[in-house]
Image (cartoon, rainbow, N blue to C red; front, side, top):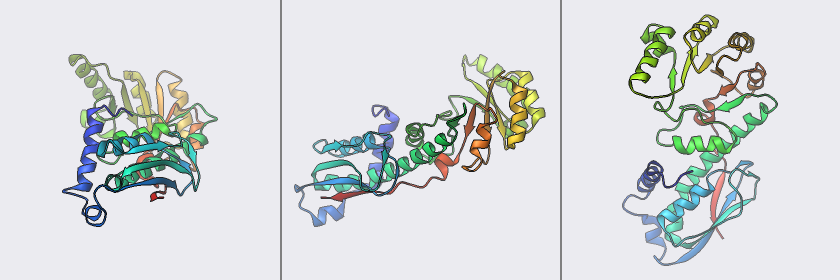
Length: 281
């Protein structure tokens, strides 16, 4: 993760301001201002750890005199009882960062853990696992980073770095052919070179997308049997993607159809956080 990125810096600073406000009055009231202490991040779950570098950055952002000592590499498998890192220095600073660090790391580790589980399930195929834009507002850069740590592949970051014509776009535009042709004209007029992906709902729409020429075709809510027919129809003329309601129990079946990508919104919108705790010692 690029901590020099102004967007990342702004999001972290907003999170700090949201939590601290005009002061951590619990720490200010109960603990002398210059007292030193230490704490460690205790793992209370099994999964993939994510956000260690982010934690170090947050601690440093709040107080550059804090000493951060990491024992586990980003993306490692962790078990109950593992210690991810120690932090030492001003107690007020440690306590101010505690919840913010845990909020980020627990969610990001949960995403990485779930991602790895699905990636492992389709590892014997050539399909790659994609995330989506179904992310927590303001948290996208962190959640998509967590997907990559878990072995998944980031789809477009937003509306600006790839064209995806979904059913509503196509219906409003007057159909797939009209939507794609108008998009190609627009991109040419703007001197932009963006990949174009089109969502399809049946084999007829797949044929139409192929005839007009796109970079990737998404098969939305196709059954595995329908997916096989669609992949065979495309026959390598463009990239293919499966999407819509794909779960742990069905993902292997979809991967075995020969599709290139499988997108799963649940990677970021329905994940269980990993149980972590920051404890004094």
